[in-house]
Length: 233
Ligand SMILES: Nc1ncnc2c1ncn2[C@@H]1O[C@H](COP(=O)(O)OP(=O)(O)OP(=O)(O)O)[C@@H](O)[C@H]1O
Ligand SMILES: [Mg+2]
Image (cartoon, rainbow, N blue to C red; front, side, top):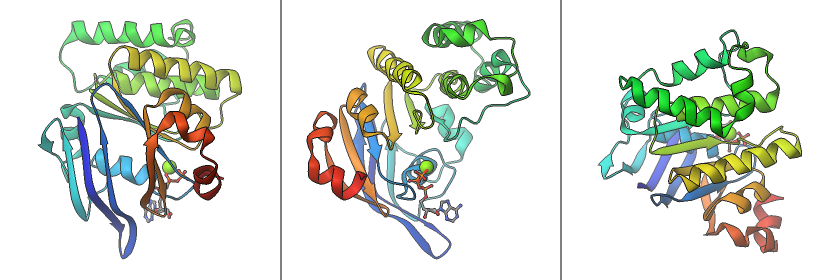
């Protein structure tokens, strides 16, 4: 569904990504791992059009969309859950969800997806009228995921959804990602938590200093001493 070939990104003269290639097959969860500053968010930003690649190809559903504007990529079916729970703090939970659907005209589909998002995160249903800024950190992260789902994506990009969450809330997030996979959603999951990636992903790629240094099945990650020690410390 998504094919990234030889992707290169620079900020000014600084090369951030070099020759990054990976595929995300339809219906799969693919993890992108790596330490702070390794380039994970930059990959997602290149996919959603927030930064313009210097080179390489990005094909989504057969279309080469490298360098497209963000709104056009969103309409193509690619949605990003931003790093750091960026919700609209002064708006209610329900209004945040409505905003996630701003590109859509199919009211019935939006209503159905709102229901689906609230079924996935029942804690949000109880708090639909609350201002998003008054939610706990875990609830805000859930809202960020739910809002991204409201655009009706075919591919969901998640940027460290487990970071800063208490262990039981990490468990809720893992369960939600599994449920989305069961529904057939395709997911690219950026993580630093190897346990989360191993629990939900089919395959994993490890970034270091803007290059992919390891690719393989996600289930083997926790047993791969060398990969853990060398790249994921
Ligand atoms: N707008 C920017 N201008 C210049 N350099 C940037 C910019 N955004 C990111 N960088 C640099 O690019 C590199 C990769 O950053 P990126 O945010 O992609 O890493 P990351 O893997 O997502 O890290 P983290 O786990 O901390 O979120 C870093 O060295 C960062 O300082
Ligand atoms: Mg990041």
